[in-house]
Each structure stands twice: as C-alpha cells, then as structure tokens.
Length: 255
Image 1 (cartoon, rainbow, N blue to C red):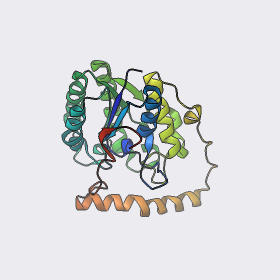
Image 2: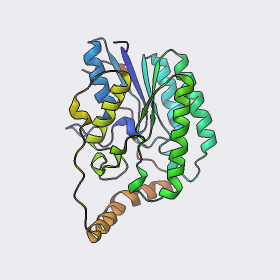
Image 3: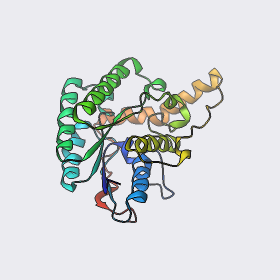
C-alpha cells in the first residue's frame, strides 16, 4: 500500500453532496475511498477533505491547493471547474491553461494526483445547448492534462450508467448515495484497490413517468432548486458562503 495520506480538493462533488451521514453532514465518494485506503494502510493513514460546495475554480486553486501542498500527502484528488461552466463569465481558455499549471504543481511534489472527467449531468438540466459544449471542452482538457503529467484519470463521462437518474439526487445536479458509491468504486479501481462489489451496483431505472406528471415534477424541481440557484447568482452569493471544510487537517479517520 503506497498511500499513507490522502487530501481531497474541490467543490460539492468532493465534499459529498448529497450523500448524508445520519447527523446530516456529507460523506461522499472521497470519504468512502479514504475508508478503504485506511483499511489497507493501517492506523497510520491520514485523510483531509478541503472541498467546499459552490467553490469556483479560482477559489479552489487559491484557497485549497496551497493547503493541500503544505500537507505533503501521497495522494491528492483535484476536481474543479464544474461550477464555472454554469457561469456567464466562463473563460474556457484561461481555465484550461490554469488547470494544467495546477496539476503540474501538484505532481511536482511527487504525489499521485486523481483527476476526473465529469459525468453527463446536463441530460436532465436546462441550458444543455450552452453548457454541454463547455463540459465537453473541460473533459477533453482534463484527459489531456492527465496524460501529459502522469495523473490518474477517472473517466466518469465514459460511463453511460450515470444517465440513470437514480444515481443523482433530487436536485438533478449532485450525486445520490448510490452515485457516490459508484464513483468511489471507480476511483479505487483506478488506484488498483478493491472495493465492496455493492458500490458498483446500479439501481434499476425508475418506471417511465407520464408526460403530465413529469411536467409537474419539473415545475416542483424548478421552484425548489433552480430558482434558489438563480437568486444566488443574481445576488452574488454561493451555497458555500458559510461552509468550512469538513476535514481541514490531515488526521486519522477516527477523528
């Protein structure tokens, strides 16, 4: 077992929304991966999760990357940019260039780095014509960066299983508990570490919804999730404004 420490960096995807512990805090794929690595490495294993929901790429780079580098871990996961592609001010060329620089910096420490090509979340969201090409561009850049710097690529986009709505939460943007388990299984497979087979099991597709009921569900979703998101954009607020990292320091999982 070559990893004795793991630091997770990013936004809500890595924080673990919407996979809740009984106390309401979030678990997610990174906690699941850390638990499995700790079982292999023993009591000396250390884990930190710096990810905060709503964070844009520049904030992740400015706030979390220096902290991760200072911890000098054996393994770093870096997943950012998903919130940026939803913004009107998205600058793909600037983000791609900075993404490459950050991964080069992370790899220069000798750490193994996990990168992700994002799953196709836009299939069930509005704005697909505008946002889907941005996601495709970012995914292409992630793959090229991983190859260039010898990072470990977890290609969620290539897995059509994520088209199953049961892998997504009711907000249609974040993963469900089953979705997080599947990501954890794919991360561990990329690392060459075994996992519980149940993590890769996929719930059956839901029964087809009649047209009228589907439109009513769309309206409920818009009122509960889309409109609050729009209000935050108009007022310059973020869902993570009052949130701090759930595991800001490297420590054992018994903390």
